[in-house]
Length: 496
Image (cartoon, rainbow, N blue to C red; front, side, top):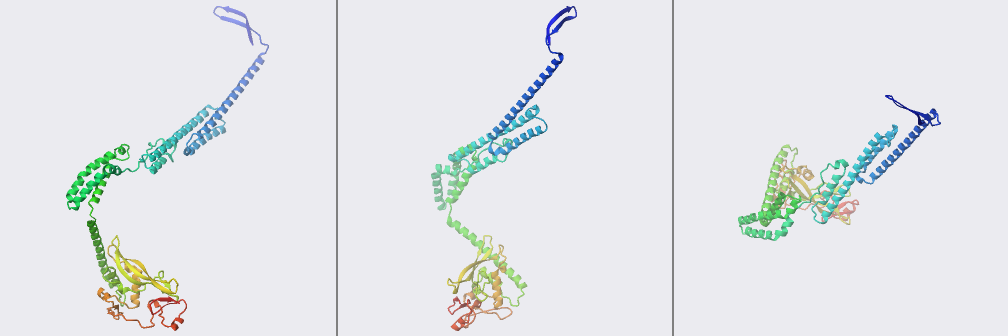
């Protein structure tokens, strides 16, 4: 180690020269070794400082992540968790690549940049939460006082504004505005003008009832504009907050006035008479169409008929449905529907029978439906006899343009089947003949020209309709199998 100078000399133009003597007892080699040791010590100290910095940064990083979890809106947790997972993945990848992410300057800049973004997102999330809750309180407070807002629609709109969107995207959404409930100015008008309006319409009614409709209308038209102006004044506060518009208020007041006018000048007798006339004409036209369609279809069927002896059932059913015939000719015709019949105990069925085909119904679309009353069989409560009760059957008869469709029904099929089976013809039957009480005679000619004769009692021990045996003595009763349905002279049906 250098000591104090022992020789000093100065020569012009050459500068100073100093010679030092050695004070240190260490050799030059020892000095070199000491210098290396000092460098190692400094390096170790630097490593310790670096490790401490890394530990401190890591602790700060984890503490900030923990703080974020407690300061974020619950509905945004999935988005925040995704960002946190990304920054943690970055630190792990850096360590795998031999870089300490918490001491390396470049890695630190990246990590804390990502962390800053997460904190900003969490802060915005918390602000949105506070805004959402504030808006919800605003909506609830309105329901307790003014009720300007539509509660359900406003809450739905608020949820849509803050749900299903990333935090950054929510910031781009327009400012939330509650949904106003529908406003009507009429209640306010009724409070300030109700009595006056009633008097105006009452006076107009007097003129109208006296036949002076012109003056009645003039009176109401003159009072209408002031009514609308008052409506605009009453609605001014609602117009100011945007709940309604001047145009909507004026239109509502005008419509209300016109409705009240119609009510005040309403004459139910005239209106009912007009409506009945319209309905009558519509029904009449439907029957005209049906009659025309019937004649056209009957002609077509006549051309295509393959029957040796036509029954003319199609024609007569159509005449009956359209009011030109009588259902009396179809009485007691079996309607062979097993769902409406009952077993007769001998392997067959007791079927309903046609009681009458009433005047048909005209539907709103001008199609026509036939209303058929059946006598439906059913067992008595003691199950010892058969009773017949009314059962209503509705059959599509004519479509909306008058074309017959009843020929596709079971009603037609069963009437036709019974007529063919029993040689019944419905040709040349008139309402007058039916009304006479005469029964239709079985036709015997090929052209089916049937006539009428006075009804006579059937001979004893004959089989009534539906093959139900008539029992007149004990021997006949004893011969019946158990469970058989039978009838007595009184016309009632019984079960053995």
